[in-house]
Image (cartoon, rainbow, N blue to C red; front, side, top):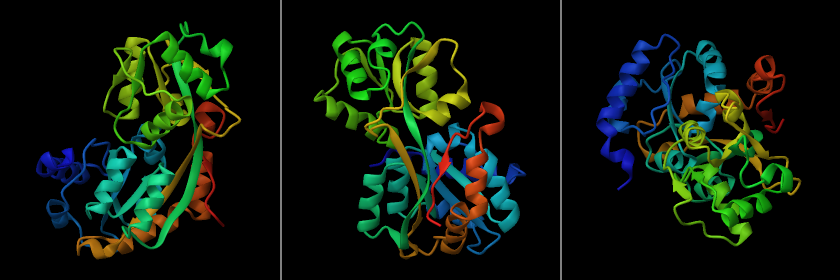
Length: 301
C-alpha cells in the first residue's frame, strides 16, 4: 500500500483548509498525496474551480510555483492545490486518479506513464529544464572539486572510494532516479554507513547534508533558492556528457480515471504553462535574485 493512503483523510482536510485560508488560492508543500473523494466536495470541475497539481518537490522548494501560480489563478479563476512529492509518487497519484495534472522531471517514467494510458490524448509536453549539481562540504574531503569538477561519474566514484557520507533522496523522485543512473554508470551499488537513505524531499535533504556536512545530488534551482552556501558548495557541475541534464514535463491525467478529474482545468493549466506567457515567467524566474534564470523554458512552439 502506498504511504499516502495511510494519511489520505487527514491530508485532504489539511489541503482543503489550507486552500480556504490562502487568499492566493494555492496550497504549499504537503509531502503526501490526497484522497480524491475527500477533495471532491471542494471542486466544482469547471473553469473557476480547483485543480490538484501533483508535482516534484523541486518545483516547490525552488520557489518557482510561488512565482507563477498566482498569475495563472488570477487569469483563469482556477485555484491550484499543490501536492509536492517525488516524481514517482506524483505519477502514482495520477495513475490512481488522485490528481488532475502533473509537473514532474523523470522523462523515462513519464514516457511509461503515457504509454500505459494514464495521460489524456495530448500526452506529455516539455516545459523547462535546468541541471543537477553535486553538493558537498566546503572542505570537500573527497577532493571532487579539484579532481572531478565536471565529471559526475568520476565524482561519485570518489565518494564511494573514500566512503564519504552521501545523503540520497531515496524517494523514487526524478532526482533519486538520476542519482541511481549515475551510480549505475559507475558500476556501483551504494551501501554501507556512509550511504544515508533519507526518503524525503529535496529541501529537507539539502538541510540534512548541511547539518551532517555530507554530499548530495540536487537540482540547481532548489540549491540556489535555499542559500546553504556557507557550509556547502557545488563540487561538480556542467558535465559535458549530459548526464546532469534535468528536463521537466507537464501531463494531464486521463479523465476516464474517475468523474472527479477536472480535465478542463488541467488542460487550461497545461496550455498556460507551455504558452508564451507561462514560458516567459519561467524564463524570468531567478534573474532578479540570482542574476540568472533558474529554469530554461523549452516548450515546443
